[in-house]
Length: 250
Image 1 (cartoon, rainbow, N blue to C red):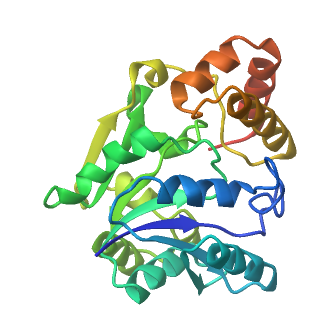
Image 2 (tube, rainbow, N blue to C red):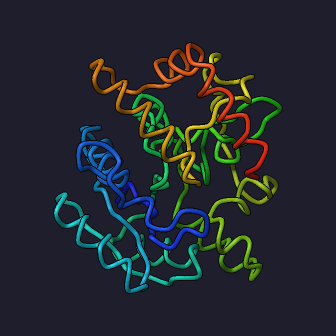
């Protein structure tokens, strides 16, 4: 079985509760991401994986109200939580989505889904300039493909807390032990380093909220081309993004 697993929690260090806060017209970032995944019209169930923390009950409740399943697992060991969620639902091929990316690009996600049918691929995602995995960039529009078997192998290979917090780093950091497939990011993205659409801080949230509202009112889908055009036309956005990129590490 295949599944899209959205990794979500309320206990962010820099901006607690960001995934459930009102982002646009009463909708949270998590709601927007769930809807985008459901609208893909593929036979992949959507699962929200959250933690046993008391505050994260609201995430399970939201998942239920959105018509998707949820899993409650280890609060500290994110890798274990992800593995347990996959095993609980019998999913062996996984798309990992982070719940702090309101601009997750559906067209890029659909392209990534094609790797689920390729044999012997443990991990697949996009790469940006200099072969950097897109997940380590500030774009915040990408997802990752990984197999349950690969994550189980990571779990058996290391007890390092870094790799148990950052679920897939061990896979692409050890290409001799995992078969990694890379999709070159679109040209409009590949060599660009001044864009930041992920949400880690209050400034990130506020600028993303503003941009999302503008694009929605213009009837746009919020794809990467529309985002790039909006930022290029607004010096304020570019300055804030550059400042946040300098302050926040990936």
